[in-house]
Length: 427
Length: 143
Image (cartoon, rainbow over the protein chains, first blue to last red):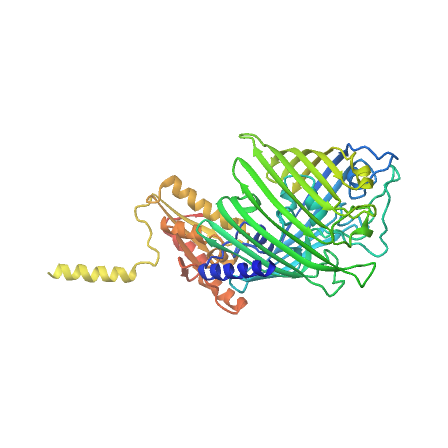
């Protein structure tokens, strides 16, 4: 399937490469994050954003009074309600020599408290550092650490994400965790002693270090984009921890309806694939496949927005933030979401509604064959836009978790709702 | 017949003497807009100003010339993201002038001459072009 997908991408890329002479800045994530507007970029544009939030989890503990991670507020996972500065990012981007539009760079650091910084106890962490070479028509090269081409929820700029928390499928299946040999499972624990964050390295944050070939081609009102990337498959960790490389394939076709930037109106169809292997940090002789595939559609108009995406994963299926010892598995998982936003005319308010579902093969020691765990979530939210750069999100997630495995079901059945409020300011 | 030949000679001479930039002689307002700033936002602003002037006066009643020099010359690079807007303004008779002194300086830095928009007309010196236009009753605007 991957070979077929690669073949299709190459044929389409060659076709559109021959058709186009356009160098227009395209409003899609590949181009917005990897390139600068030609002839109009600054030498060093400083930018960033802050997100401050409060979350309150309504779940009940298990029969013994213990909690599992979905019932606690991350990244610290020791309380059911907390204020947090979950993202505080500052970066610089531009063209080192403004007269030459063929080279641009992007560097970004994270100083908030989240899965990137908290596991390792960092005050700051580098999340992006890349150089893009735009010399070859139809084949731009991006080299360094950056967001790999993939699912819409991971690839999009997080500061324009319309919700506070990720869907379960994105959080559990796509957002990769990297255990160390010393990371041990933690049993459900009662608050205030709970500390369920058992992983001691940063989450992958949908990023990798490697090289990407990509570009966008215009054909009438359509924009067709492709990306092929090879990376270490080691997230935000510097260097490679084994000889295996991850490959990433991405294609999108978008009917552009108007506007520009991250909120440009259009109808986008996209598909992606990620394939790699991981060497176990516990047993170095064990290698485990890790494959993710997905496709989706997004319509963003002036009055409303609709997104739907389906994703499937094989191997390395996450079993909980408290269970790093069970991540080297050959389970399968899949999930999907559909979400919409309605912009209330003549006001600064927006209403958001999202349904997401996620099913993973169970890997608990007491699981029977074909046991599965399912997480269904309905999120209703509202956004108030103070201005184009500042907004408030308020959302409530109604969660329904189930498992065929009795021991898991006992922990998950009391997962309840979660209230979250967040203010975002982009500068 | 002699008059006809005289007129013909005069017309040919005028054609050679005529300035490279044909101004709209019927314009009620004559505007020269300066872009010499490295800030990309200024590029958009300059084009917006030209567009708004045409909307207000009508393209037959205003003569607009945009003179780019220094870092502002990037507006007239062939691959500039605003090239479509420059095409559009050109059809509204807006003239774009590119400073030759800047082109020479950029050629030294780049190792090759910058590729300019096909509608950009090189002038000896951007600042001199502005002074000439001001002397021809153009009003100078620096957004």
